[in-house]
Picture 1: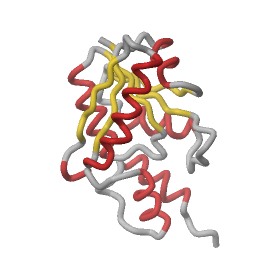
Picture 2 (picture 1 turned 180 degrees about the vertical axis):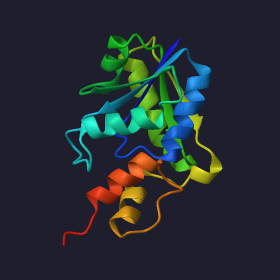
Picture 3 (picture 1 turned 120 degrees about the vertical axis):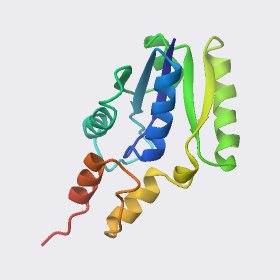
Length: 160
């Protein structure tokens, strides 16, 4: 079975990686798909985010990384995915994610959504929080993989 895990991943965090690793154990193939969202101005390009995820998931042979624009259900259909993966950090995520799952079901009735919770130690974590900490030089080793930490330090390096 093929699962699709869509998101912005700007940048990928250990919370995202919790979800990716769980999905890799559950499905034959998991496609991590980076959305080009016209409503957001990402810190990292699609190519950078793709490289970050590929490096961070190199130990997982059944993970693929793609990019897409448009409706998630259309991309899932193109990838022959039967399942969408959505991550939950806290109960506050559930209402929005359930609404999206119901909406996606109306657009593609054969596509199911599975909610996966990240570990407790990463339940507070978001890409926005990571970027804010990195912007002010705070420690992020426990929040993102080493390759992403390096990219964030480069992106927020002081201009001398």
